[in-house]
Image 1 (cartoon, helix red, strand yellow):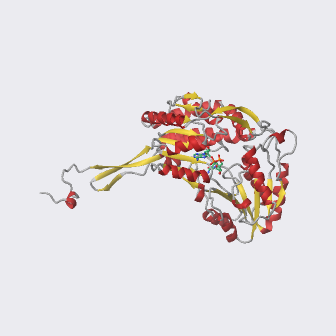
Image 2: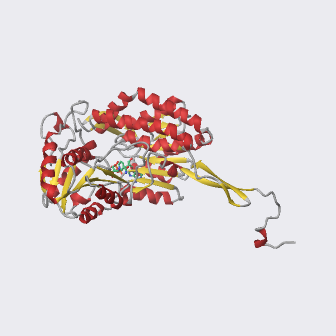
Length: 492
Ligand code: NAD
């Protein structure tokens, strides 16, 4: 039962059933009847009907319902954490301390933000008229999410949309639908009307593509790979939908000569291994001053060896599995090819025996000596793999950081305030951390530059995507024959 359409949990009618797997054990978690394009039509129609009422609900009422949703989710936090861990193969500590609280905080943030939708001041910009601005919802939003953070992605998609008065049809990844349905159910339980939040679990190429092309969907919001993002752009062109794209990343991690080495080493380990590296902002390309290069490599390798791969439900496990065996093999393939032109300092393998061998695990992997234009340095790996490239001058470091089609996130490690200032100005990415890498916060926007997409998740900035601004201009002279009419016709 992985479809939530018009307030009803139901099975999909595509006639295709797939097995949900816990990728850390290879065990089945049950089966999913996938959604058909007809199910997508039902969900879009329900969202369209619900929009009539929801778009007229006062901000205070919407805010109250979202606050109640946050309370309900809080009471189900452990159930959500267990479900997220099982379907993703991620360690329970990450689900409990990052995914679940982060998602609930997003709901709480938007409960407040719903009451603060605002625009620029209005007034008499023409002497004869008063101009006012109306910030209005757009209509039915079609959203597509990836498998790496299913719960947080559901939150990032649903909250700004519904807080602004839109209704939504969310298609999670068919690999990880469980927590999206549990999350959406909480809105219903809080009293949000049926049809405001719908979830359809189907294949990307049919249910997903149909949702993106649907004539009754006014906006599409997609998080996933740059490859699929391009097809979403094409689909949206059919009826000129508004588009919001959050795509891939290949974040540089720039360690300048004056950096605090211990901080950089620990930051690189946490920043590259979060969610087994299946994080679009993960540190993937360490760019390290030549004087620190060897010490940095030694420090990271030492810590990588200490990382505990273990059963995902065990609080003591640092690293879980990758999302699937297929994805694990893709990561392993890239590392194997890199052996031909670079040095694998540590990792580069899966556990060979014991229980972990039954899951899609892969050891933290550090690679040096790869040319900046080699596959392992330029392509998104989406696994626990960090490459290290040396540099000599600051100019070179900035050029290497920007030598990518992506621009989602980056970090600069330095104790020099001027270097930090230059790096934050010149690195082309939607987020640049200084002396840290990864933290996100509901109040601040998340989104890419370049081929990492456009538009923002989280924060007030997301309302720019999920609302449209109407200019209302009202005559304040009360005259029938206005001066400007004479330009068009002189009359009698
Ligand atoms: P993906 O692009 O393969 O799939 C994402 C979603 O798109 C899934 O729900 C999938 O079913 C759907 N889909 C696939 N083909 C489709 C089509 N033709 N039309 C419509 N929908 C389709 O990505 P993934 O492998 O699930 O996730 C990993 C990718 O997501 C990485 O590239 C990662 O960087 C990116 N990502 C980006 C962000 C961000 O905020 N920028 C966040 C998380 C993940």
